[in-house]
Image (cartoon, rainbow over all chains, first blue to last red; front, top):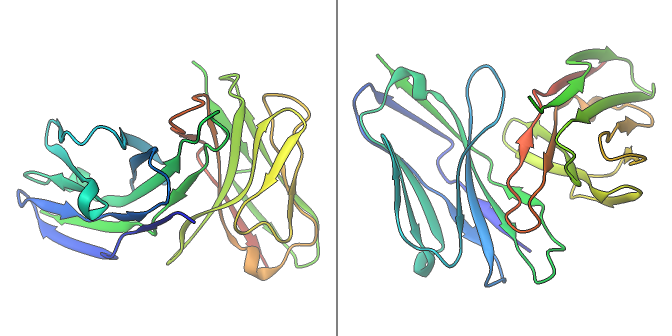
Length: 118
Length: 113
């Protein structure tokens, strides 16, 4: 069975600090996708990034970057120069992409609450 | 713009009552999902559907049912509401047959007294 672990329940930083959110996953499949979602205080879930298991290149999008390491089954998320608007719950998720496309459901971690203080 | 909408957004009910949460998407996505969000548990999958007339149980399906009579709708029914079902419920849909990227509704907060 697939599993996603976000060991950090809550993180608090001061604005402009860099912060890394950890995500460790378990799956028996060789083909899978990893995701990060953001849930701001307003409650909606916002897609941030998708990564497939064959692409271990790190990705940067503005102040956000993601480090995917298959060797340690980790997909960590770093926010550089954090801002108050980054305060949210962040979820890491895993989907398995089986041959024939029969399994698309996502398994989520428990989330990390990030608070960025001014 | 295409979207996914949930109703009601907030509901208070009593133990033992039947409750139905509606989910409607206009993306024409084949895949639809219901999750519940609880403190300390993150998002847990209740039921999902990969197309019309297809429904499947997720990890926390007891006490819930769904039906899929058309592409746009996946209503979630609590047959006999229990206090343990007090939660925030999210409906989601996806189009991709491979990646599983989900588009979420705004959530429905259900309180069972």
